[in-house]
Image (cartoon, one colour):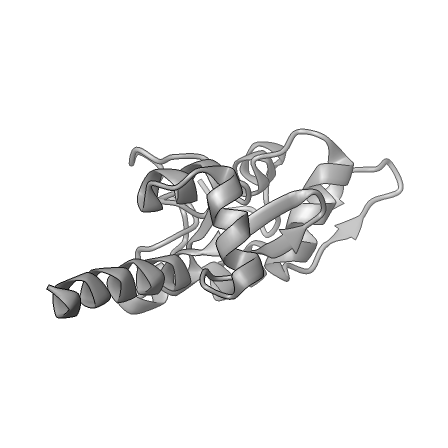
Length: 151
């Protein structure tokens, strides 16, 4: 079976984790993925462009388990097959519930630390706040180092 030049509707939904066209466009823009709208309203996304930006080809990873997040980069069909581990962590985007789970802080504590300059600032994708996993992990590592040196 030959692979299509463009993403299918299902692949686009999986990549963006969105069903509505407007939301899909916002997520594609946040990812920096070029796209066009057809006259009938459907979105066109070049498969080669997605593979170039996100690595892997998606077909080989389709059977893996994955956790959906705002832009669908965590262990999804588009992620991590051909990228080294450091690039994978830099490219993974986290939503607030996952950040809260990782750091063990409440929403208000996280935003208070952001205001104080003690926590990584999120990037905005429409109404969604997103954190880069490597920045959050760096913060966690710094907290561990600070607690070990204080003891």
